[in-house]
Image (cartoon, rainbow, N blue to C red):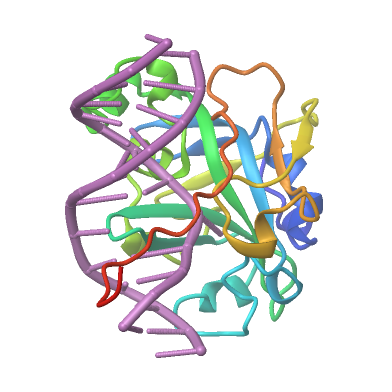
Length: 202
DNA sequence: CGAAGGATTTTCT
DNA sequence: GAAAATCCTTCGT
């Protein structure tokens, strides 16, 4: 089932609905167990906090599309665009369980020692599904990557987001959602204090 | 099992 | 110029 009207709501409302949903990538399917909501211009942790830029443009587009971005010099993460066109909210896919294409997922994620690690973490999940940065903006209803919403809402818990620096990572923004007790949910980690770059003084 | 540090490049100020 | 919605390896208990 794919229901774009359901996704045309703020990401905080959509996030719990994505738990238990299945993302079909290129030969691999993953059942989502952990997500985070980003609320556009009212959210200091969101890429859209300071308005539209070349990078975050698809967040402002039609809901139900994929928003991919490059980060930390080497990783790609994937979001489901939410809220109506013109409003920029999205849900980051943080972790999931491989339910189909296990062999292929293992080939793509050679560093995983266990199957639970194949898609435990946003950049890992992207690799397992065969998603690339160039998949930015594809339609999750008909593209190479598709989203199948769950029939029923899974039970869930919520808390502060992981790895988000600044105010957006505090308890004031408890927009991380997960399925309790699932082995593919990543452990909570607060963002590290900034590393001191090498400078003239020490 | 937990903590710590390094890798590496796009993006925006 | 500096930060960034992360991952992996290594070291310690």
